[in-house]
Length: 317
Image (cartoon, rainbow, N blue to C red; front, side):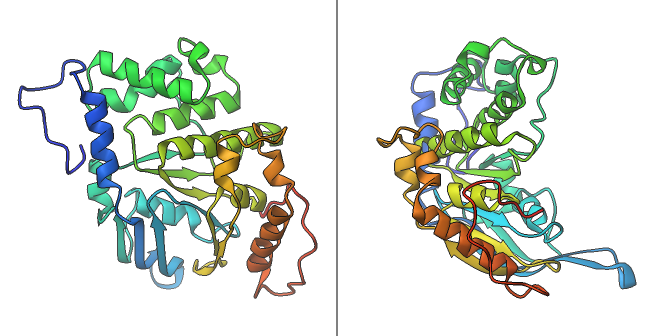
């Protein structure tokens, strides 16, 4: 429960009450009008001791604004997933602080301020699509009617209304990820934490879901911290791309993308707006990809000037 939400004085929730959905939405919006969604200050995370000590992150400072989409990109082992886990309170910094909407990561987790989506959808195979989306609400004690209404709203948002009664093994990988995103949005979080959610998908499905995610973020106004190895994916989705160095992970550069993602998210007028191809084929997109690629290669042994990037498939593994 959000810190500004008060428990129902009549007792436990046994179903929807008049105005419940509106009140919850208004409360969430009010609590997220602060300028900062995530603030990490002087964050260091080490593993092991002595000669076996590994410094995963070293003195990382990062601020993510409310409603902002920020991607973390860097070579494997640079600590980007570790940083995401610290924000999610799945791990604890060795030193430094992490705050989510002005409170500790633990307090934010208990308040259900954020939703999480990973590379594997993690759906429960014995539950229907609707029941998987309802799960966070069920665990939070939301009544059955309220859970169902919210699940139907979210399935419409991700385009899966007709599959509500299917089970996960009846869905494609891309559809399963859309269910996972819907589930992450169930509590109306003001922040989404996403760790390579499209990494295992084919390129066409991946691009379609990227465009879907932009639309969802435009409609929900949630902030997003997104881990990826793909330069085009980071540029397409993000307001800013955080480029991390090889271990020990530090922020090498933050690239301000500066593309008109809002127009792409909400439709625009081009023939390929449903997939985002108009944005991907824009000269500004190519230029932003080149800037991120240059930042990734800067300072690495034997680094050469980056070649002109292709529009798609430019990954750092």
